[in-house]
Image (cartoon, rainbow, N blue to C red; front, top):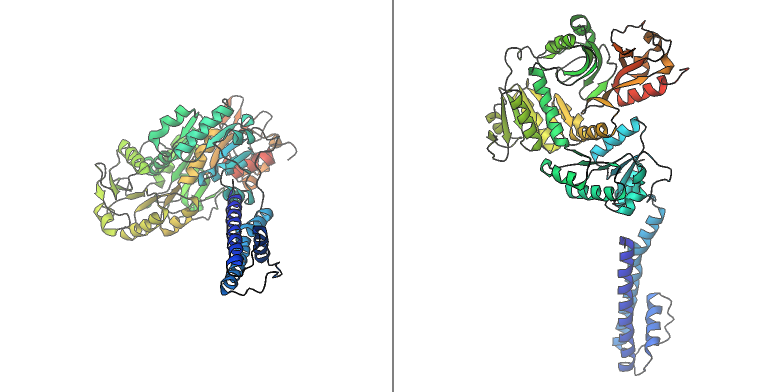
Length: 548
């Protein structure tokens, strides 16, 4: 029974009770005060006529004050009950009739889709990923108002309970490619159990909030259990460890001794303050800049006049020795002689992951949290300058803010930047929409949990996608391009038209990476493309057919 039906039932019960009570009182009053006995049905008729304002006063006038008072109260009660019916019954009925009707079942021809059980911020990133790969999806939302809002926003959604067998059947789960359970841990395990009952062979991916509960998701039957916060912690720590380790870090091997990698520019680097054209990256390191993130915004290809600063992240391709040379250029001159201490603020799941990664990379660090714990070095508030000073932030090289509250993180960024203007500041964001605010506050690098989680889900479901970084919407794909056969890369002008870069061509079992504008595409060549989701999708659409 929905809210409107429940309200209607309560109103009718109250109305009938009040009318019967007044009828009994009117019947008794006519005998007692007026000396004119009437039947109960006659009394009920008078009450109904009074409440509906259709009465003609057949028993009027009344000689007694008591009966006149009773009729007056009856009149007022009837008016109140009539007006009460408008907001309680009539208005909701009209609103429901005029509001958007959300479907309760998927279209009959929907197949090979991804069933997303409730839409969270990370689910929005997942949906964007699925759209970029032309993969259908269907969202199940049990709350009627949220389902209507999502439907009006343009999402493919049905109003259904994902813990119900009927709902998953209505979502055509047996014809789906995968199901994503993205709610609380208990609800997710319930969804997985229901999904296995409806379609045992369909792949189920469950998101776990507490890593210690991963076992129970798998016992429920989940094929994949993802812990986004642990991945976020690894991503934040990597911005420190890849800068001080001998390993290249996040890189994808395209061919023998040829890679695509991300390299953050650190504060104090010789590249800071120079434009890409002035940096001499190509001449000095030999690597190619495919794209770059400026304050969290990705540009591909980047403007040669764009100024590099601390926090700019370069997406580059080249041979390992070339990228190693470029990495040396991105590091701080101070760091070449002294790594400097890292302060980790926050010791939840994300903070613990960061601390473990830094320990494994032999990076000196201090852990600060507002709760006392054997693993916490300094107990204090992240927004308290004195507490941050006790953690040594004034002399530290890097601070990583791993706080679960974006508002506190934004304030902590301001405080940390004020205490140490030259510190390298890395922050965690819960919501993608708050990333730009953190950059404006003074952060050098920000990772969004929602984005990381969504990319993680997409990478699990879209097995053909090779992701350069789960926290950025960039990927490396291998694809044939019939529309480019017989043309040179210079003639095709791929970069300007799609925003993608051809970093390699696999031909006769070998990957060619020395690609100039005169390189001509042949029949059977498989191109290795690097770019954003939107760019790679545009490439497949514009270059993937003959006669382009």
